[in-house]
Length: 128
Picture 1 (tube, rainbow, N blue to C red):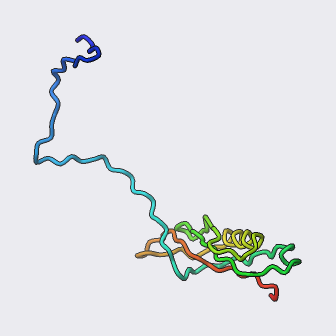
Picture 2: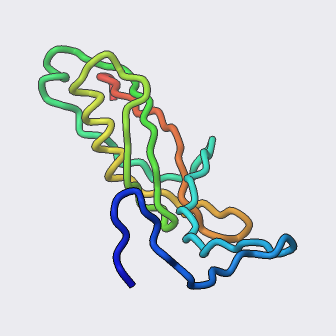
Picture 3: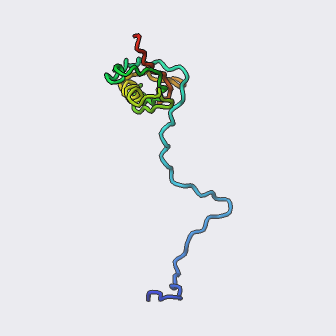
């Protein structure tokens, strides 16, 4: 069969199956997206005590950083970010590092371990 040139249609005599009106087209299955972490208000976490940055101690910096952490289904902290800072970047960085080194009990949803997100306050107090 000769190839079609611009502006011509090939002489295609091959029959093409067309779905009947009553048939439903089924798409190939797509793998399910991973579960989005559930936000948990009161997580069971063993928070690591942050190292007080030496320069922050010398200059009298203190405050509380609110850190959002994310765990995998096993309770390992896989991500952390400062949501509300203490007002001091060194303290915020130390709070984030402490959250990343922490561990949480696996979150159970209907008896199944699931990833979770939670917000935890990390306080730096010069009196402690």
